[in-house]
Length: 86
Image 1 (cartoon, rainbow, N blue to C red):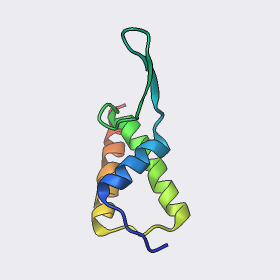
Image 2 (spheres, rainbow, N blue to C red):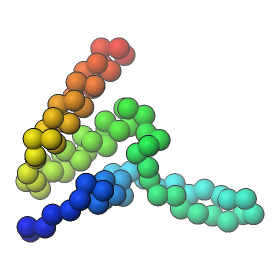
Image 3 (cartoon, rainbow, N blue to C red):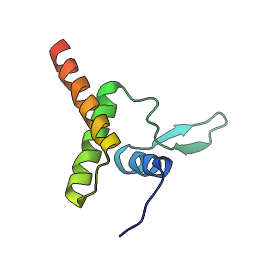
């Protein structure tokens, strides 16, 4: 629809779209929902999230910049390496 968003906004959107939130109990019995974070993901979990994001983008016909294409290629190289190690 012709709108553009910053990298930070897309990052927040992807986390809420593709990662589950967690509910934790705090001291004193309070319960709080923790927003998802990519910082605590394993390489495999992050790879899965990126694959879901790429599939979504493909379905929506989003345009990939050269920088995004390079990142996708790097991710695919990591996946190939992980499969060889496993």
